[in-house]
Length: 224
Image 1 (spheres, rainbow, N blue to C red):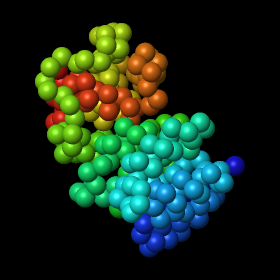
Image 2 (cartoon, one colour):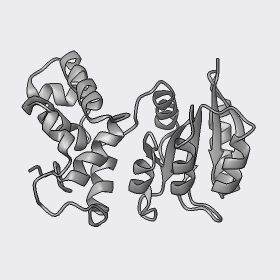
Image 3 (cartoon, helix red, strand yellow):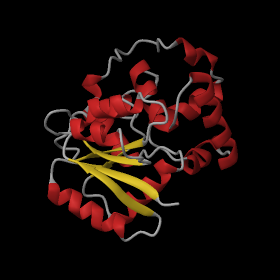
Image 4 (cartoon, helix red, strand yellow):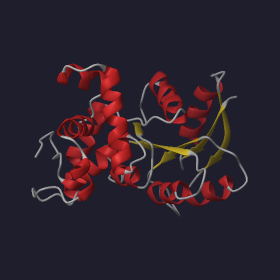
């Protein structure tokens, strides 16, 4: 079955470009489009969608609020935020709102397609370099004041799980974490799974958000 994709962007030319790229894939189809958040919510009431490619800055209802409303619904489609980075100061809020990741609008087609497939399969898309740059830039939005993390659930993590969580928050992949800690990728995957379960988090994106919000990891890659 094809991955049903919805394009949400107020720029028609961008939607056309994305649609052409996706239409060439045997496992994807664009089933809906919208020019703003309000229209997107209306279309989703009558259209079954697996993955939403969501712009951030749009008229009527921006991508952050649209993402929040979409992700609050049962059996909601996955949302992949599309950002220009230098202009969109709401991408971090989009992740907090429930998006499964973000990509730059000028991302190479192969990376965009890979991200859509990853999100559809239940993974989160957190590009390491982009994650670090984004969180460094938006660190003033975070409530961390250098104090000890306040999220009590963090106390449930073992020392190794906290170590893995800090590396996940810095954007490292399972393979990179395995190399850093001299562990197997399977072991790292197990640790990540336990972290998600203990903290009640959906995916790696939420791990990143929580780690920065609590001060477990500081912008710039520093740790407590």
